[in-house]
Image 1 (cartoon, helix red, strand yellow):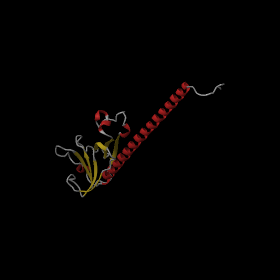
Image 2: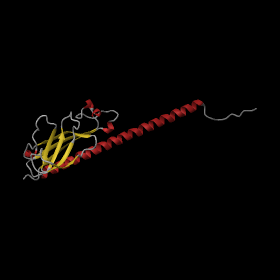
Image 3: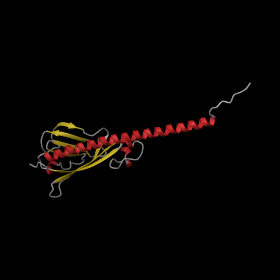
Image 4: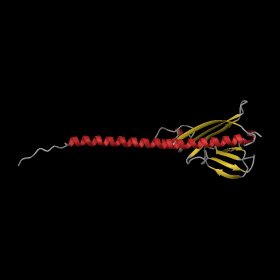
Length: 199
């Protein structure tokens, strides 16, 4: 019996081909996962930026056209233990939970109210919760004018993500560079707002 020599792959060639193919699949899969994370992080951050800008724009409009003296509209610190900061402008009340130990820390409510000060006791006509899910306000300050320009400075810092996604588990610090960062974002905005109606 005569055997014909057949051409084919040796076991070593097959192992090399499988190794190369597996490596290529791992690299492609890793790249797709990273792109997905980048896309998710961009989406989360864009949503928070949009919300922050909308809140700034609404606050600026209320401040410009409320027709009230802003010094009176800024509520003095609430009696201890104070868990919230309240700012009233015309018929809009901004309420932020500032107690970091509270379960709803950083919760922002934009409420339509029935009248002027004292704004902490006026009944609420309607309430909006403008922040995206799992987001909170960690800074909300309004600085009165310090010169003849008459402009107020509003600073807000809004974050999204679980507490353990932040450095030292502190919402006032940046997001960690770790898995899960795609669900964490920090946006800090400052607006200079001039009054248009002051009667």
